[in-house]
Length: 205
Image (tube, rainbow, N blue to C red; front, side, top):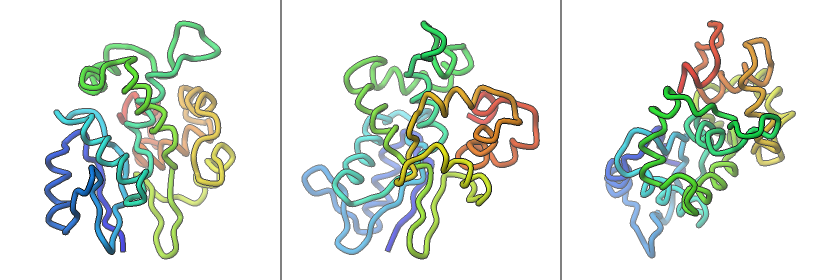
């Protein structure tokens, strides 16, 4: 049995409270239940005051087999912010403009931008699948859409993780006709946004 939890956004106390109410216990630093697992729906970071703790709770649960997780747009954005654009030296896959910094500033301050902890979290975010297709249950951050999932499959591995994050991020900055771009909007950001001529994550972040 699974318990689904989404959009924690750095509020660790609000995460621990329902875990305790559902009879999960923290044992040796890992929240766990003898019969159930959590599925995290993404968006661990940005906004809240306990972002490092939030990621650590979820990561420890996933890495110890007590939870599963999918990528949200805020994890995608965090990776793109941290990764240099190989086609444009000195630039990043998510532009370091004021609007993007405002959204991401709290996480960067709490984790310490470019610290070892920051790098470790970014590497973990890269391992998160776009979606889970489990027996009797399908999980994605925003919208399960078969056509967009087929497009995404060209860029993901057998565990539904991005094979090449640079390709995925560079595609997202193109116009709304790019298939991968549309697919990412629909699956992990804002399905309704595909009706408008705006750039993904600049509007929907």
